[in-house]
Amino acid sequence: MPNRASGAHTSGATQSVWFPTADALPSFSPLKKPLSADVVIVGAGIAGLTTAYLLGKEGKKVVVLEDGEIASGESGRTTAHLSNALDEGYSTLENLFGQEGARLAAESHGAAIDEIERIALTEKIACDFSRLDGYLFLPANGKPGELAEEIKAAHRAGLKKVEQLADAGVKGFKTGECLRFPNQGQFHILKYLHGLAEAITAQGGQIFTHTHVDTVEGGAQARVVTAQGIEVTAQAIVIATNTPFNDRVVMHTKQAPYRTYALAARVPKGSIAKALYWDTADPYHYIRLQEAPEVDYDLLIVGGEDHKTGQEENPAERLRCLEEWTREHFPQMTDIEYQWSGQVMEPVDGLGFAGRNPLDNDNVYLITGDSGHGMTHSTLGAMLVRDLIIGRSNPWEKLYHPGRVTLKPESIKEFVRENVNVATEYTELVTGGDVANAEDIPAGSGAVLRRGITKVAVYKASNGKVHECSAICPHLGCVVHWNGLEKSWDCPCHGSRFDAYGKLLMGPANTGLAPAE
Image (cartoon, rainbow, N blue to C red):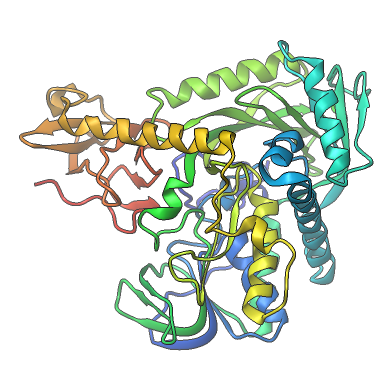
């Protein structure tokens, strides 16, 4: 496989399938002087770039500020499914949001696939976009009644063409009883973002990378201020950073961070039918094929094995389990080319958030809570935020409003469960360390040590040199945990992540780990 952009840095040490299979993304300079714009967008993943593109089409002057490079967050670590077969299931969504809410959820995610296709065609973006079927199948211990209930709910949500089959009847994979969701999609995320970035700049939009935003202020004098003290004023601000860093508490009680794992393995060309596949296991598995015309094999992409961020002692074991599951279900698989993990935000009521920030309702907007559907949720979120900014009504506004409260037993129970889980993590402030001293840490690894009344995150490099920083997350004070797979410090409370040396990788924290005292 050609190694085109393997040097790209994302939010972890592992390498996803996307960078080595695409040309290098365009590079941009840091912001060096004050600016004014109609809209300033923080984040240059799919949510931020789609928002910038759509607003540019409306004649708005847009500025995009990105802490790293384009797609250096979670957009570069997706599996790039485009689906309106939502993870929560339509029977659950109908119970939580009513039949009309479930219909709008199906409509909006379907519209997002259409919008990606339209943008790719309009801008002539060669991003391997294709339409294909998706199949929801049962795991070994699954109950057929699950599918019978789900197809009825899907039909009530407007997905009338979903059908139940005894087997998908496709080449290379025996699903058993399943539901077929027609007209799904897939694409190459980095090729798409490359094209979006070029289209934004052609519109006159400006993109600045390696520009960290410290301060966000809404209101009549809306502005963002960078770490270098440079100000951008605007009529509206959009926070498109996977999880919002400008809101310290409220949004982070409504959603929880999870790590998810993926691999891309060689399979003989044509040995597996090109489609999307998902099972109903918990955590579930998700599968797709990435064709590779320049070589004599295709890449089978499989994901799953999710767990709460910072709450797994051995993440590499999750990849081992994923490989074992894949080899069992796809014996034609040979070598694994890429293995990686990513982070998804799971809302307590199953649907993401897009719209006005509940703490700054005038002109600050959020796109977050992807719930495993980051590509479509980011796109529909961009479409919704565009409409709100230009004053156009949008039927999805209430459904995805970040300030919503879903008072149903299922969502209340999930809210309590996730927040009790967070509260439990604070007990680590008074426990001992992972090891007694730095000598006990293997080279190339990290561990938390107790030092007096606080805790220290200690990383021992491969050359034996020891690096120390505070183990207390600057967001809300949880003790971080070492992630040996991604060589990072992960917060088990709200999902902030830092590299081995304490540098911020992703929020909601907005600074790195402090120096060790």
